[in-house]
Structures are given as C-alpha cells and as structure tokens.
Image 1 (cartoon, rainbow, N blue to C red):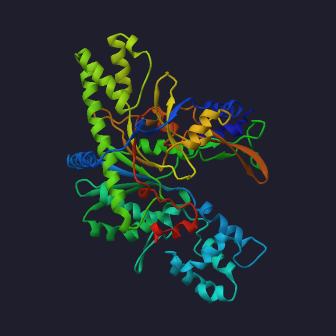
Image 2: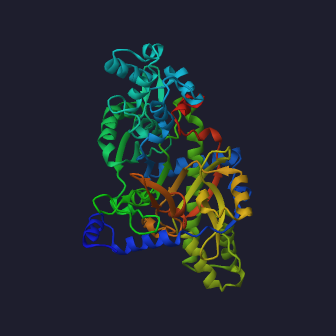
Image 3: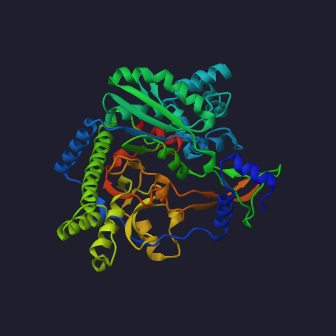
Length: 504
C-alpha cells in the first residue's frame, strides 16, 4: 500500500511506517467510547474551597514560589483566527451589500467599540481613501469587512488570535499575547522572572517574535521583572495521515500522502520539553482587561496552591511506601488516593499489603494537574467526569462529546445535564518526588483519539486527531477538579464576543 516515495515522505517527517499503519488501522476500527461512572459535581469529584481554605492554599502557593521553583506559563497559540470571522467572511461573499443578519448588524452598529477600530480606520483610509464611517455612510460595508479580513488590509482572517487587537487602554491596545504576559507577571513570576511559552505555527513565528520585541520592555518595566519568553512549533512528527472514506490513504493531486496536524494533543510533545516544576496552561483567547484580572489571579493562585499541597503530600506518601510502613499509614494513603485524587478501585481490601502498596505507589508517582472547572452555561466543549480506566480503576477525566456513546441514554444524560464545564484552566506538576521530569508521552491513553470528516478540493476525507492535550493526553495523570467562578472564563469564539462587557 505504501510506495518507496511514501516511505521517504513519512521518514522526512520523523514518522515511522509502523505509526502510519497503526493510524490507518485506527480509521478502520475507530476509537472505543469511554465507560462512565458519573459526571463530576461538587462533592463528587469537584472541590469548592471555602474562604479560609482559599487563603491557606494561596499562601501555600506564594511560599512555593519563594522557594525558588521554576514556573512556566504555557499558552497554545498556534490556531488561525479564521473561525472567529466565519460570519464576516459569509457577509463578504453574500449576494447582498448591507448588513442583514443580526450578527452583521451588531458588528457594524458597534464597530467603533472594537480595539482594532483605529487600525481598521487607518487601513481603510490608506486603501480606499476614506475612513470606516464614510465607507459605511455610502453603503460600502464590504470594503470595511475586506479591509479587516484580507491580506491587503489587517489580514485578521488569516492571523492567529494571539496577534489580534483585543482590548483598549486609552490610546494603547493589547493583543491576547500581551494579556498573557501580564498574567504571567501577576501569578507565575518567581525570583523576579516570568517564564512564558507560546506554541505557534511556523508561518506566524516571526510576527509573534516581532510583537514581543516591541512590547516586552514596557511590561518588564511596569512589573519590575525580567521576562523569559520562548516559542515552539507543533512537531511534524505529530502530524497524522488522512484517509479516504474506504480507509485507504488519501493522496494529494501529485500522488503524495496528505498529512494533517494532529490537533492540540500533539502539544504534549512541546509540553514535555518545557523545563519547569509547575506549568500553567490556558487558551490564548481566554483573557480579560486589567480591571477584571483580580479574580483570575486569585483563582490561579488557588488552584496552584492546591496542586503544590497535594504534590507535597503525594511525595511524603511515596517515601513512606519506599520504607517501612504501618497498616494505619497504608489506610491513610489509600484514603488520600481515593478521596483527594478521586482514584477509586474495588477489591483493594483483598490485596496483600505489598500489592496494595505497589498499587498506591503507582497511582501517586505520576504527573499531577489541578483543573479549574466552571458551572455549565451551555458553552460547547468538554466536561469533568469520573470514568473507568483500563486497569478497572475510576479516575477524573475531561471528556469531549465525541468520546461519549450517544446511543447510551444514561451517558448522554450525564453529558447534557453535567453541572460543570472545562474552560482549559490547568496547572500541572511535571516532576517526580526526586525532582526528575516525567516523560509525559508515557501517560497518554492512545485509545482516546478522534476521527472527523473533512474535505479537500471537494473530496471527502477522514482526519485523525491525537488524544487531546487535556483529554486523553493527560489521561494517566493524577487529577483534581476545583470549581472556579464563571468570571475567570471569557473566551472569544467570534469577533462579536469582543463586544461583551468583559472585553470592553
């Protein structure tokens, strides 16, 4: 099935023939649905710390930072913003010339409220000889939209979200990338330094580097810290082969194999190369202006404090298990694994002391993450669940709808009636009790990928996504869910989301 040219193409990406054969097999077999125990809820897998507990955890975090640990803020920022402007692309291509849909009317009625308005106005004057308002007065709305979207204008239809102008501060404007730099200073800085890492696409790397060079000095002065800003690209070796509907390899017009990016799960490789004790992970578009940052900072410190407190306890218990332990200590460790880490398994009472100790040690000696979850308000995306693992134990997982068997009415009810939602608000501990980094790909559940239907040049194809970064890629981590306020979750999925009060 694979020709000599195919094998050369595969090798050039750092992918083995065995990997390709496995991927093609996965198109045939699909991925199994997960077995669910319950949707996580407060009191059943989700912590909701009270005020005094919050203060204690925040203090634990500040003490941890003062101990000279290395903290990194990791921001996936490689996606283009094209989906954010789907409605505006539709307007440019529509057979009418004036705003007609509610979305179009809202955009043009409030156009001067966007942080990018001045830049768009300047671009219209340069390209059309008239500003935004004059063009709209004469009914030339499409010229305004084209100047926002297309390459001769602001090119927002092709730029990554991280480089769009999101927020206004008087005469100044900020991109999401800059807002993440500010956040890095406010809750992740240690020893006078803030480490921020962005994953970006190759074609946008130079633009990111240029914007950082222009802006980082002012933020460094403002917060009195040194920034260490780094970038990485998704590895070609994490691309996946595309297939035809009959599961044979999909080929380009020149006969070569078509490869597609493996989705955000590919970034486990990038995360694995970060040298840090603790890593914060947050999506690029979930940012707010400074006036609303206090709540975000408080709860970031909270979940980090919960993480380092739980990790400290896990390390103590591993050392106990490596020495002489009492039956009472075994029971205490079992309670911690079951209650704090929500990792439960029937039949532990039937194990010998040695087998129980080995089981508990295996559950403790893993990367650890604390995930902020918010109350479900109908946003699309994943949710927190208690699910069964391949060893028969139950643990906390973030699931996407595609991982759930829709024909199972009980599972479907769990997903639709779940009380909480995953806003991608993670803090991760990635070193073991001896201070050695875990090899994160070892903890991926490879059976949790996704298959989706796509097309290229009018031809149908099947695309394979790797286990998601905060889904199956972290399946075998110790996980703790913590309820955080909805105010910490302000994503920008469409351009009109920037008109929400939180982004003004």
